[in-house]
Length: 333
Length: 302
Figure (spheres, helix red, strand yellow):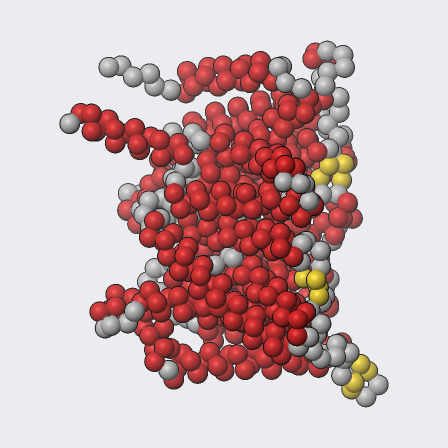
C-alpha cells in the first residue's frame, strides 16, 4: 500500500492548510478566546523549543524562561529606543536569545543530566535580578512593549487581539515547519544519534559538542521568539512576565506533550492555558475561597505532571502509537 | 574593617546553612542517584510543622527536633511511596534521564500548593529563640547575633552526628556500601531498598534543620513562595555540585565557599548580582573541575 508521506513540500501545504483552518475557526470565537489562542500559540513555540532540546538533543533545561526573557527584553529595548518596525524587533529578539543560548550552550555541551538541569535552573533564578542593575531595563516595573495598531490591510477597527492571534499563529506555523524540516535533516539525525549513544555517535564522526551547541542555540532562538510573542500579547516586559514558574510550566508542558515528539506539542500548550480556567471553575463551584483560587492551578499542573511521568512517560501521542503498533502485531499473527 | 568582619561572619553563617542543605542533597544523590529539586519544598513543609509546634508549645527547642522528625517522615514517605515506583517505571527509554528530575519538580509544585492550601499564602513567622541584636565589639555593633551563633553551632552539631552515624555505626556502613555498590551490598545481605529510604529520611531531617535555621535567621517570615527557600533550593544545589555531589565534606566546603563569595559580592558589588555570581561560580567550576572541589575524576561523568 502506498503510504502518504509528509515531505518538505507537501508538509508546507499542510501547514498552510492548518493555518487557514485556525484563522477560520478563530473567526467563530470572541476576542477573549482568540486572545487565549495567541497564548496557546506562544506555548506551542516555547514547548517545541524544549522538545527540540530535551527530546531530540537530550539536554535538560529547567530555565528556558530566561531565554524567553532575553528575547522579549531585546525586542522591547530596540522597539522603545530605535522605534524599528515590529518585524525587525522580533528578529532582533530571536537573534539575541539565540546568541545567549549559544553562550550557555558552550558550557552546557560539557554538562549532562542533573548538572545541566541545575545550572539552567540557577540561570533562570539569577537572570531576572539583572534588570535592577541597568536603568535602561526598567527595574522591577519593566518596560512597555507597544507593537502598534494592526496593519491597515486588515481593515479599520480590527481587534488587536485577533491581530496578536494571527501574528502568533503565523510565527508558530513558520517555526514548527522549519523545526520539522531541521529535525528530519542531517542535524536532526545527528541529535538523535548523540542522544541515543554518544560514544557510538562520536565514533561515527559526529562532533558531539558542536551538535549540542547547535541544538541549544536553535532552541534558545525559538524560546526567544516565544518570549517576544508573550511580551506582545501582554504589552509589557518585566521580571514578573518571565518568572521561574514560567520555566517550570514549559518543562511541564513538554512532558505532557511527550518529550520526544513534536506531534503532541499542541496538547501541552492547550493544557497549560486551560488549567487555570478549569481550576477557576472548580474553585468557583467549591465556594471560591481565595486560598483555593490561588493554589489550585499549581496543584493541578503538578499532579498532572507527576501522573504523566508515572503512567505515560513518553507522552500521549507516543503511547497511542505504541498501543496501535502492538494491536497491529497481534492482528498479523 | 568592621565591614570586612561583618561580611565574613555573614558569609560563614549563610554558608553553614547552605552546607546543611547541600548535605541533604548529597544524601539523596548517594542513596538513589536523583538530584532532588523538591528538597527545599520538603524542608519548607517541615518548617510549617515546626511552626505549628512553636504555636502550640512556644518553644523553638521542641520545634526544631519536631521539624526534623517531620522532615524525615515526609522524605521517607516520598521515597517509599513515590520515587521507588517512579524509578522502576521510567528506568528505560528517552525519559530515563529526564523523568526523575521532572518528577521532583512536580513534587515541588505539589508541596507548595498543599502548603498554600493548608496554611495560606501569607507570611508566617517563627519567633527566633535568641536575640537578633548583634554582639558588640568596642563601639561597633556587629550584624553577627546570638541567633546566628546558634545557627552555626546547630549546623556543627548536626554535622558531627551525621559523621558519627556514617563512620561509626552499622547503619552508616550499610549506607556507604549501598551507595557505592548496590548489587554487591545486596548480595552481602544489606537491605538496599530499606537503606535508601533511611538515606532519604536523614536527608529530610537535615533539610528540615536547614530550613528552620534559614527561616529564623532570614527575614523571619516564610511563605510558599518565599525568597529564602528559593535561595535554599538554588544555593543548596550549587553548593552540593561545587563539592562534587558525592562527598559530604565537599558539600560542607562548597556551602562555605558559596556563602563567603556571595556575602562579599553582596557587600562590595551589589545585591542584584548575587544570583548571577552564584551561577557563574557554578558554571566556571563545572567547566574547570567537573568532579567538584573534592572528589575523584570518574571515568565517565553522570
